[in-house]
Length: 475
Image 1 (cartoon, rainbow, N blue to C red):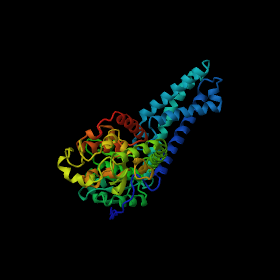
Image 2 (image 1 turned 120 degrees about the vertical axis):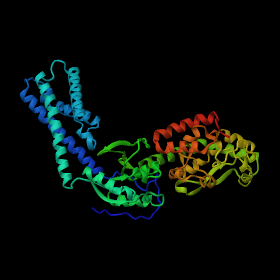
Image 3 (image 1 turned 90 degrees about the vertical axis):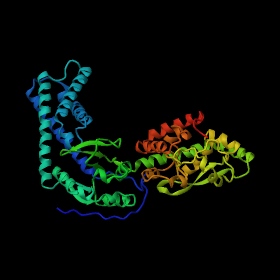
Image 4 (image 1 turned 90 degrees about the horizontal axis):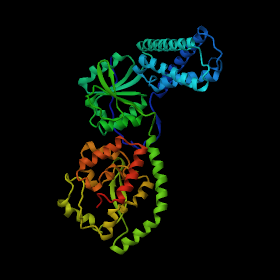
């Protein structure tokens, strides 16, 4: 069988700041499958209940006569089944032992509720036992029929997920045979690993979304920067499956699965993609406006002290590298003499940063008297709230670095430039200037990117206040 190859050229656009909020690919199919399973289970439970009432010992009880109690019974059973993950795709719905445990637990829970609500009667013992046994038989039978029907339709080419394979030529045949053996995927195309190179990634994602690709199978060797690739597929709403895999989990959201006899990792896409950026941006906007209003008297005081301390402007503006390596001017209160940037070249040999990527000098002769105080308490960073207001920075994120530092990056570090830079970050609250090795600092930035959440930002902001007040590692 022949498959269409992919030839791509690149166009670069935002990653973290997605242009629009989009829905995960294939979500409608997944929702339809879950809805069908819930209907099937409910139908099985209704039949089991009616048969239990018919054949069991009669007992005048609201649990068998009133619709509200019947709805509560079925809601609890379906809810406990769902809580055990038995509506997930693949082998989850075929975990019959877990299904039996969930049904048994739900009936015990109902028995407890009935005893607390009305201890004199619930249903007869025979009705309860028959309902329990028939619930298991009918529900498992329904799942089995669902599986048989699904496999029959998939063998005929129906209800298959459209997928795309990215692998090198030498592994192409092996991976195609492995995926075709599952008989639940339709291969829409195959591309070589170069389509995930930095200059081609954005075009690749656009192509996959245009073709309606739900899942992408990518060989382990095709991914040069695994964290970055996982992230861009997640942002595009496409589930990423990596095979074959080593015995290591490189991403905290990855799930280990088996296809045939080969293990592979799945990186599930969020239901709503791009929403994390807008949540972060809305918070930054509201918080920066509030902070500017509260801190305005402090701004005026610092401006007056700088003017009295040394000649030169109040604010210092410097080109920094921001989102997608775009330059912008960062604003700070001036803490050095006017010609500080020209003097840096003469001080390069005194750089205290071990690998030389960042420039750090503890007793920097260029710093003014008021500048030392401002740096000790990080007050020189306050004007960057205006950068946040303009959308050039975030309150929390990797620090924006000068071109000099970014030019010395290894290519693996460029994911750092794919998020909005921040005033503070995990690096700053974990030691700030005391971290004298760039490798250690970059690991903290990557850890932040990989584990980002709104609550992580809140925790870093609170830790920043504590670190600043204790003026740890600042100079």
